[in-house]
Image 1 (cartoon, rainbow, N blue to C red):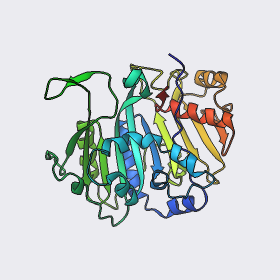
Image 2: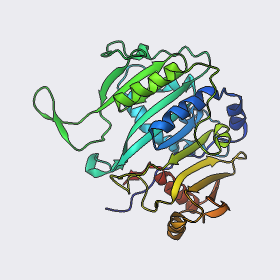
Image 3: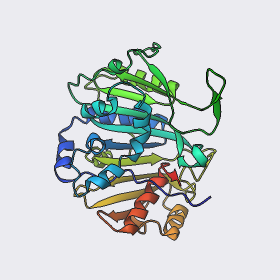
Length: 333
């Protein structure tokens, strides 16, 4: 198989958008991030503007901004079978979306190509005072009851699997994906491809009340909370089913976490590698030897950083593709 190409999903937001992000109540985002980081290996966040193509793209063109919506293509596809314009409605009534992902596996879609599969959960951060009502879009759907409220389930074709199933006539049909959704008050909408994860996360968010401060277990959280786009991954040790799909070909046991964030000026993407010990630098050597990124440079005993200028040239684009792959989000083509 040809070497996979990585899909760029997040570099955006400077100028007026960065200022707008500072005005948003960070409590719900911090709480949702804290919940996800306990269950998932990779977390990434994007403001809603990039998904809506609102024109607030900083130094990015509209075409570039549209390309950045790829990580949420799964969410949009999952909602495509529902009535109304739920995806746009939800984004218009939200400040941003968080996604947690783990258990990365190679694609099983058409011809074995497509996006890397994973267990994932999206948390949509509704705006303060939102009147968004998820039930409006599920008037005829089956409604199982959960501890915190209602959970909706529906099948949809996302081309995740090569396995075939049988329809009611006995004919071979593509295997459908099973999605679940729920709403937690007027703050969160959750969509997941794993029912148990969805129920657990919803229950935790339901138990939380405003005024209960919580800082996510993420190094330099202040930098993330002020940015419109960021990603964080804390490596979980154990058997990895597919190191290529997981973006771990160059990752050794000395690596603790990776992250990226758009800098405050919107001029560069900062990719960081946090090591378990100052002595362990095998991952640094591997990443630098592949020349996919600007060289990682040491900024602290256990911390290395690569700076990718924005906007850039084709080399910059390749660097960003590689960075995204390291977080477990890649596309085989």
